[in-house]
Image 1: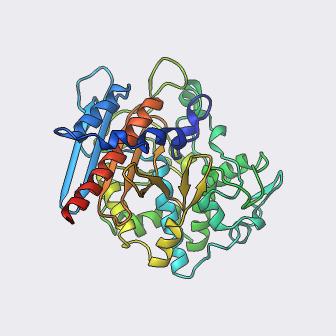
Image 2: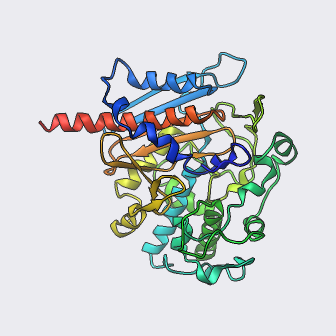
Image 3: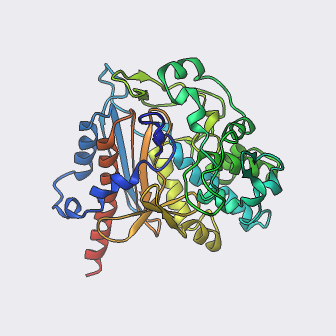
Length: 388
């Protein structure tokens, strides 16, 4: 993820993967013999890095395993809830890309359509030019458009959070803030993560369908898959149902409760609320071919190097190497006090997801990455043994 100020560039993106993956992909840790209840051991290891609460879930066609550590609220002994809800941050982008690709499959738009075609005059000024940027480049983060999140006070400081946590942003207002800066590069000439890309994708979904991004996500993904604990909250600042509190330090030594947040600044890019179990169902359905036609799923999972992150990136989905060989797909994310890391095997048969309820640090991110890697590699080992 991209840290704003000292830390914040991890708000909604694949979190500092280049550094985090060094240990996960090195091999020796995954090669050690697993002891009893390895999932709980890994969750405890994440908690030991300073996370307030940790919850992880691993699923396969015939099993579902989970583990937790820490508390749901600082200063109490209340355990983090099972199947608790949290803001999933950048994992939202995979939902948005899925809707766009469904519309492509229906012939209602093309990945080669320009932003200007659907949003006339929206991307312009300071050398930004929507007539030169395609929908594909938005989803792939090759547009060059600057990220708007550094402009959001509520995400950058404790004072900003207290003053503006309930502020509502319109998508057009957010894009306008990004247009105050020149692009990183000409469209297609580089790779740079930008939440603005997915805000624009949400706006295009609205133009193509005549309905909001939130409604399309609900009708095309949430309801068909029965994701009963997943929602697109819009400007509503609270998390309904069981959940743990979220905490942020904003580069200081003091944690503050940041659970209440109007996440309208992250429409299309990071605002969805879900659970580990619902996300597992989503990833399983997506890679299993239930949400996209083969041609569109191939587009999504055809990746290119993302040097900024040290991984490969497709359309709303990252491809991350496994220490045991091969790779998995996923989209880690963060939105102010909730951080998640998860992935799914290429065939969609096994998922591993974990989230924490505080900023944590590099050790926290590393431990989360290691959990996902080792759980998916354990499946790889079992599958190989079963074939002997």
